[in-house]
Length: 548
Ligand SMILES: Cc1cc2nc3c(=O)[nH]c(=O)nc-3n(C[C@H](O)[C@H](O)[C@H](O)COP(=O)(O)OP(=O)(O)OC[C@H]3O[C@@H](n4cnc5c(N)ncnc54)[C@H](O)[C@@H]3O)c2cc1C
Image (cartoon, rainbow, N blue to C red; front, side, top):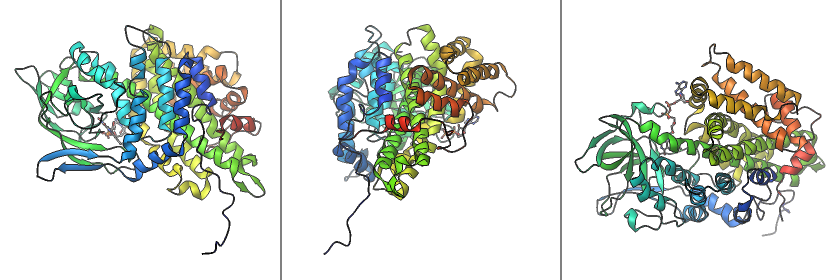
């Protein structure tokens, strides 16, 4: 058949580049926080993330979502989930690169390595740009470790399995596996944020174990080897270790009723399991369930910040790459002043998130220091709220930069857009996080002090930042109608924190545009409304991935 036309003026696919090396803000952040020792492996992971093959795994794992098999062909309960090979390829890379464990392997309570959390955050953010869904079990496995430390026996048993760099899928006795993964079961039908309404019962047994009966409404990655689960014991809400296969090789009762049909995150399986006399081991004291699992939640909240930072970076990469290659009205889109303002605005959002992400990871590294721990307490709740809130708006705008192609499933933006709201929903939805900030403000004066010290560390460098910090200080001391003001307050806290970091560490073009728009108020409601004077050309140039 004779061709009717040549295909022209389409941007080439964004492949064949180093996702890490191309991200100047991230490379500089890694160096700033003493983690450049990980550069070689980050560059190698970045190159892998930029390959066509990796990108194709991301696509395939989402167009072939997991399948639940409740019953086997003989009529026995199976409760297994089957994944496309692409999912396993993504998991293999994630686990073999230690994205679920490197911070604990590199740095432990006995042997501290500066920057271990920062290096892991950078790696997780680079590889999540390939695909977001498989980050869920990776993140939960990473996060389970500090919670497990509350019980030395369970920690000795499980931490070596969870920190192995071997991906060994399949339900088999944990002691026979080369590596295990962990999930988490808190949310029930009648309440997610309000976990104290959990109705799953836990009955103590003479051998020291418990039997759990009840349901969970969301339990992601049900093929994990073990779960940290909340249930009501005689002494109140308690945390448990619940394995899918018992040490004697028999299956623990874990009836998967169905998998959720989700907006995005389609590669990942999110299940509704029922427990029926399911065997579990108590982790921490009875009645201390929230206190115990909060260690895990703190880590998954950091991963929500990392996940959305990764998503924002993917948005900027796709949008700037497209604009650099696509022509309209006689010139490249990137040279059109209005489009450049949109791209620059997105790039600033991404860079602000990156600076905050590495700072929060560094605070996690240094949580042995009282002041850093205090900063982390407030900074994490503020960061989780704000960075995750920016995801959907930025994804919509980046999608539009690709025009009609952005709306089509063949291109990555549609999937990125569907993934964008999730990090704000789970691990503490927006309001719940904002209220958590209020709790810290009311009860932890040292956290407020550490936060204000960090926000004020650039004092004198930019008048707009100075004024914004002074305004936040004033707002913090106003306790009237504080619950209704929570979102406004947290948003402003996040902006002064990001402003302080950018003024100290980002190129002047970036920090100037951030301060003018986000702090100085010279900004509209949509992305692309930066004031005329900003140096959008150099901001966009810095953010554009260099391919080839
Ligand atoms: C894809 C996906 C996977 C998930 N995986 C897991 C998992 O593996 N394990 C697990 O345990 N959970 C999981 N979840 C559940 C998730 O953590 C909860 O959905 C989330 O915490 C919110 O709980 P909820 O759905 O019960 O909503 P609710 O708690 O009912 O909240 C509804 C809304 O009300 C707001 N709200 C709540 N309290 C207040 C208040 N006091 N004041 C003002 N506003 C308030 C919330 O911010 C939210 O916007 C998953 C969710 C999704 C979408």
